[in-house]
Length: 145
Image 1 (spheres, one colour):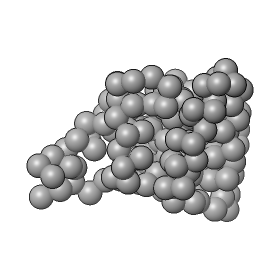
Image 2 (spheres, helix red, strand yellow):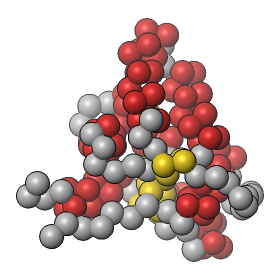
Image 3 (cartoon, rainbow, N blue to C red):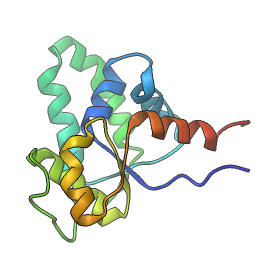
Image 4 (cartoon, rainbow, N blue to C red):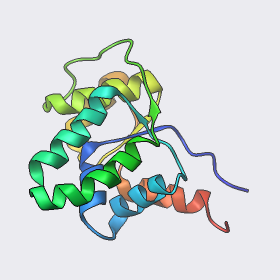
C-alpha cells in the first residue's frame, strides 16, 4: 500500500541545491521530480525565480549544463493561479511568492530555510517540511516499487 503524497511547493533553495550538488535530500527530491514520481505546485513567479536565481548564481558554463535540467523540471509542475496574496509574511520578499503559491494550492512548502516562514506558519497555519522529511516521505510512498 503506497502513501498518498501531499501537495507541495518546492522552495528555490531546494531546487538550487538539488540541481547543483550530488546526493543529499534535495538531490533525491529533484531526482524524484525528474522521474515524474511527484509534480510540485508552482506559480509563474516562482518558476521565474527558479530561473533567475540559478542563472545569476552559476557560472555561464554551469548554467548551460543546468538550464535543460531546470526546463525539464518546469515541464512537470502543476501550475497554480494566484487568486490572493498574503504579503508580507516573510523577511525575504522572494519567500512571499512561495507562501502565495502554497496558500493558493493548499500545499506544504518544502524548504531548507524554515526560519523565514515562521510568521506564515503561525499566522496562516502554513505547513513546512524540510527536505529530509519530504525525501523520507517519498521513499515511504515508493517503497517496494
